[in-house]
Each structure stands twice: as structure tokens, then as C-alpha cells.
Image (tube, rainbow, N blue to C red; front, side, top):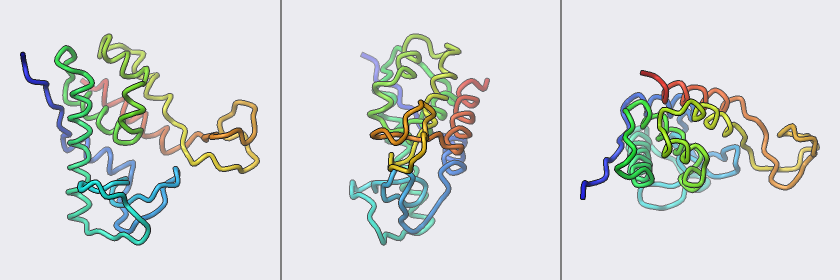
Length: 176
């Protein structure tokens, strides 16, 4: 039995994540209402959750980001097994994407289903673009997701930052 191919983030992946996440060395609440630090981290490499008041150095931020992205790459590798082979751009795009949406969401996504069927399928680009909604679903008297309902439970809103990120990820995935 062949060992599973392990996808590792390249510098392009790290740069893409930094571009869209930014870097803050003091803990802050992200749009989903979670304590976050560094480059979009909610949990440290030790498994401890980020909490209000946490502060880290740039070096620690870089270490934690690389650790997190490598973990995501390993988990993507497990989900794809040995039958699907991605190029580095595809792997980088998926690592950035999964780092942002979470491994549980990715594992049940149509995007993963399409990749498993054919990693070159053009419908994959559309699937990236479905993941552009965020926020914490708080009531604000507005139809954030444009479905005609105001303040329904868990309503998310379209975030311009996610629109830009998904475009960059999809473009990288299909870059030759």
C-alpha cells in the first residue's frame, strides 16, 4: 500500500492567507465572534484556544500559521487519499480555503465532491464562490443574505473580503 501524499503549503499559500487574513498580534473578535490572533488563528499549536487579552510575537505568529497550514494540508491529503493528485497551486488554494472555512465544512462540501470526481472540473470554480458569507448571524434588521427574509436564525451576510479571497483561491487553483 502506498503512503498518502501529504500536501504542504508553499510560500504562495502562506502569502495568500496573510493577504486575506491580515496579522494581528493581540487577540481580537473575528466576524464570526471568535477570539482570533496572528493570521486568523483561533487555536494555538498546543490545542489551547485563543482568548481575550492574548498577545504573541511576529515570530510566534509565523510559527503558528505554518503549523496550522501544514495540519490542514495533512487533513486534505487524508480526505483525498491516493487516487486524487493535485498540483501545488491546487493544494495551496485548497489549504487556504480549508484554513478559512474549517475542515468539517470542507469534508461535507460539494467542492470536495467535485474534486474527488475530477480535480480539473470547471464547476469547482463556482463552488469556491459559494463560500462568501460570514458574520455571526446577529439580528440587525437587514436581509444580509438577500433571500427576502430579515434576521432569520443564523443569517449570514456577503462579505467583500470573502468574495476577493475566493476569487484569488479559485484563480490559484486553476493557474497552470
